[in-house]
Length: 181
Image (cartoon, rainbow, N blue to C red; front, side):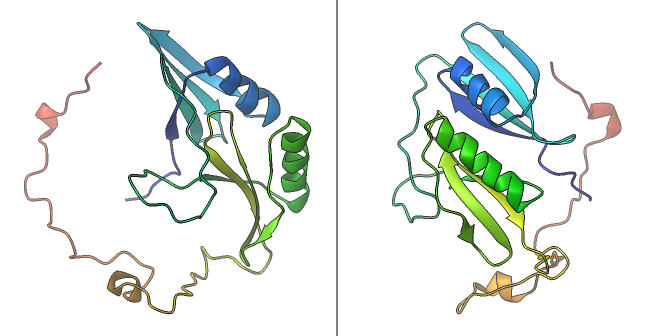
């Protein structure tokens, strides 16, 4: 099986207008689809030609309390932050300057050895990162594991390990494959 990126990340907003202004007008992602009915909206922003960022707008949805990126947290949590790749150092600095000019707090540029990153938050309190790859550190071609005590599964290597999950024994027959509307 070959995956083709993330088709979309689905987030939530209580203010679609502010969300559109931030993601389309400040960050520069095209608004490529939107629909709504009976108390909700669903809008999509183009990250690149194959990946999108989507937002549901629901009445009563409120921005989350800002949780700083990578800082441990106790209690229920779904994710830490969203990281968007950019092509160069120059583009990362341009985004940092845009965010700060618009009144959004932004971190210093952080060196993670294989990427350099800046961190901020969108109007919904969603933690976001913009990063670019550091030359000579291609973790896709040369995976790196720097953990003094990795879990057993990580010690098995970077490649998928066949046989760790049950095999499909009863695939859905083609005559039963329906698409709901």
